[in-house]
Image 1 (tube, rainbow, N blue to C red):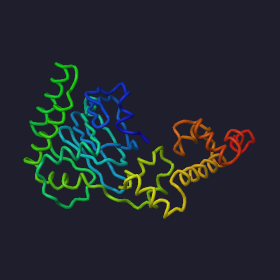
Image 2: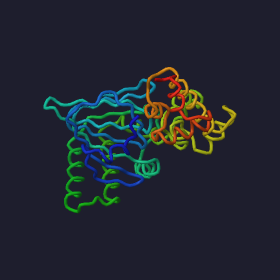
Image 3: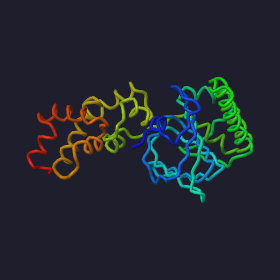
Image 4: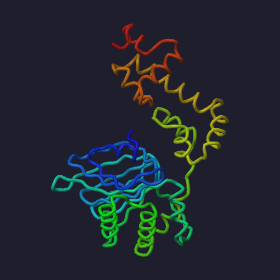
Length: 285
């Protein structure tokens, strides 16, 4: 599963305009389509497709198509993302990602009437202002070589204000964007324990503070999140070692460990032997 935007920061097809802990702004250019890429969007995102098309789907069945000239607004969460090339064989999109605090700070400057909306995704047609917004960002970056945070924040507020005026359904989405949606702890953890998420990620993805997540988890599973996650991952790893031909590195990735060494240490602590020992006994290979 791709972690966005972090995975994009070192990609050679990405141009970084701004990056700090609260805000990332970048442009992505592709010459090869990406089909149904599982993605963890770690911050709330705005995507502007300039060339090609993008399809974004949630784990609960919501889906939007974003054509060239359209904007997509995406809550933090788990998605499947497809980037499709234009007829000339290119795909280009501009994105910015905001954490909870920055999003709340920006929305607090706007007058938004509270409305009900269960949407995690929202798309609108672009206007001339969108291209003015992008041109301004590019010009400031080119002239100063840096984008001052205060200027970027002001431009985002301006963008949202224009869209609130020109797209009335946008208000309904924005009024709910700041609100976290609680998910079933048991269902979510059973579905995603094998992902490379931190406890903080699990808390955020289920719509809870870290403290609330830990407390509710202990009540439902009768052990700490860390203990339960390791136990579930090791059970799956043991099964894969005995039923598949995957190597240790691949199995580590399958059960949520991006570092095979950490996986081997956890496995040895759980079962008293390394996963390679099981392989040498002929169970896998």
